[in-house]
Amino acid sequence: MSTSTSVLCSNDALRNSWYAVARADAVGERPQAVTLLGCAAVLYRDPAGAVVAAPDRCPHRESPLSPGAMVDGTLECPYHGWRFGAGGRCVLVPSASDGVPPPPRAHLPTFPVTERYGLVWMSVGTPAGDVPVVAEDDDPAFRRLNTPVDVWQVSATRMADNFLDITHFPFVHTGTFGIAQETRVPKVELGPLDHGWFGYRYEVRARNDALANAASGQTTEIVERRMSSGFTMPLAVRSTIQYHTGLQHILLLLSTPIDDVTSYFTFVVWRNDDHTVPAEEILAFDLAIGAEDKRMLQQLPGVLPLDQTTLVSVQADKCSVEWRRRLLEFMTPTS
Ligand code: FES
Ligand SMILES: [Fe+2]
Image (cartoon, rainbow, N blue to C red; front, side):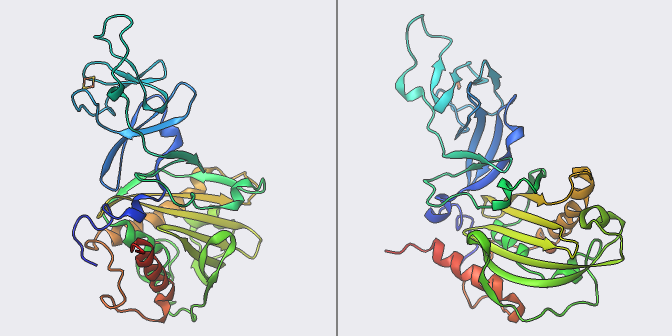
């Protein structure tokens, strides 16, 4: 697989998938500009509150629409004030005489869009699958915590790969939970995890410095984590951390290709805690871990090679190797 800048953006299977592109609460008073697989889009809410995703290009003179204003539940183009409502329909051309409707081609084409887990999910094609399933979202014992959508200067393929990898913990996560001397990992056994995820289970001893106490719910110097990490196609990763106290901390780690080498990163947390510790205190630790991954990953060039020969892999890379094999298969046309 080459690292030219259209490997991901031009791939039909990737175009026909869902990705998280924005926080749902970022779309409302203002339109929001996002880019997915090289397609610049604008997100806005119609008068009924439904999110509309459309190319960020006005059909009149090609002005970007995202700098426009929301007026009476419609998106107003900043150039000549054409307004767009539900389903991308052009509902007003201010220069037109009374009674003259907007021309049919004034309506915006739209992208598939949906809201789930506090996020706006979008596809630039026709989604073949569903948004990744986190069943705990429907379980009242769990609360959901959302984090900002950040931009990382790295391919989304390298991000998902990193989220499946545990052997970087002692080297990259030295400022958070990594224990420098604990470099060996047990033999990786792959298998189905719950609700369609596929991956592996493992145990990690993690440092539990003051910043980690809110997330772990413990104050001992070291905590034992029973964990699993798994993927669904193409780029979603779920990690589950279970402490001996019964506390579960679930992470949905989302890598969205803006283009081949630039990505959105956001993650969602579910916890079956007593809901008393403020979200910011809990998330501070995971955000610090994410910053360590970002610093490392932004040094890696181009798209991750998916073939079985370019990279050198060892037993501990088994999950990554299997995900790469499946992703390549997913991206390869069958006919
Ligand atoms: S360019 Fe949008 S209204 Fe003219
Ligand atoms: Fe990491």
